[in-house]
Length: 228
Image (tube, rainbow, N blue to C red; front, side):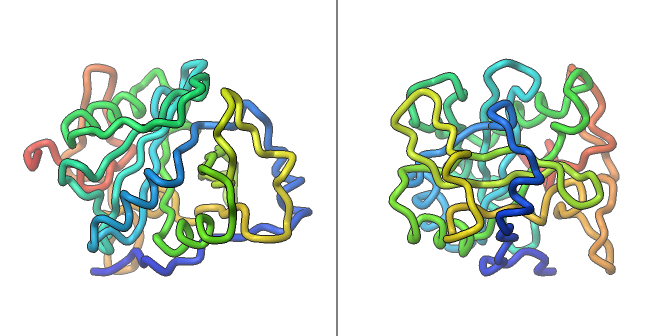
């Protein structure tokens, strides 16, 4: 069942809506070098986009983990399809290439019981969304902000950004003109991989647990330990 599309447009926000989101520096969750993102999605033909997870969200220096996504919504489990950003306090925009096992463990920790509920989400960005952002701007990377969207649900807003300094906050350049931002309207929970006939999320039948808590209420798309 194909529920995710490489051509999904995402949401471009007008200037008024962007202002009303009241985005702050503290909402920055991480950033990626644009070349690393484009290499990831373009080197895997079956990859329709990326799902972005919050890593270390309850620390002073969060980071992000991006995973290639199949059209059925599943996270790809091939080694080489997962990258992690540098912490936001780092002047480096290098990425860390992870094996699927390491990626799984880091994602689990982001869903542990001591993490704020509003941080336990991931967001989907299609290949077309990312290509449009890369083609239409000269910036060297993408910054990701946590925002509260429709229904009070957490998602990510992606903004093109130069990452040459240790604090790449592109809010000043954020406006309703041009294609320098895009909001994911397919966050998980809400739009995961395990869906019923009506396209609604189903709680994982065998909840994944970790040392830090039970992940029953947060379905991590197709990360079944027995398949790792």
